[in-house]
Image (cartoon, rainbow, N blue to C red; front, side):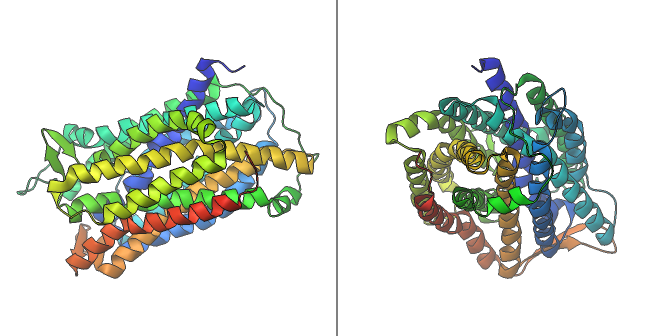
Length: 458
């Protein structure tokens, strides 16, 4: 029987990975790279696409490697314990803007982004796999998964809500219109990288030290490519991986475009009764909602009767609310209507997020029963791969679509300054609005179709 201390410890792992590093990478990175760091839209899109091709190889290999790890700390925990510090350091470096020209910046961004993805994989794949060896009780797996989501969303709430206030605290040179200069923003992001990188290190290390591995994986005698081949014969895995990619596409579009939505559709931060609503705070309302309904997800699942039914109802909420958002006027006066729709959408996200990881544990059990050896790490690595693939590809598509609409960014070769130009303002605004609403709605509809095909009846 797992203790409350252990459940909280497990939650700290995703508080660090999902609530800090991945949340900042999903929401802040697209806008940071184009408007602060100085990459072109094409470079930003290509960077994320290249990183995803890299992950297609590294994630399954990491899962297989984690399954075969043997140490006095266990099978999966040592990767968290010894990967915590590199995770924080590389994250901090990635938010630092060096005084380089266009080529130097491109090399810096590509090298560190790929390295960040590798370290994130080395920590997060084993972290997800822990769920398969901490307990064999299905209800307890749901509880651990729920704690994980609450931890991720609670820390995501803290991270996003504090973002504009940390920026104000750091300060810097302001322009005549009251906004910060690019140099000031570069310094602000660098400090944020150090602060949040340190918090991510602490959370990851705490997770590795506070959790327990009660079950022993049924190991294969030697390395083989058979587990990789078996995956593509595993029908539940195929459908769940597609569902996982779609859920992260859904979130990815919304997170990646949120910064542009506030900047170009609402003409900057909106201040209401002293509350600064920038793009991170705007999404914070969703984070706290996801935290609450992530905690309620096990009860909701019991009420509707199965994980599949719960997933379908959650996805329908996302479809309806996303379509409704598209018809809200692009006017700061409607900010609370927008916030209300973000909250409703996040009810659906909060309900299905814990289910996804619990279903990966079901698929891992199914694979062990069918094949005779454990591939828990490999199975869960596909969940991490789906997370990174969906989020980054959607981020790349956002950059590409904005470029097609008339958004141009880059670094001036002579001065080294970041330059942003918009050739068609109305087209860019309409594209941003659709990327936050209609695109995610279509993805949520696809989720409903896929979940009906998912064969495990739980």
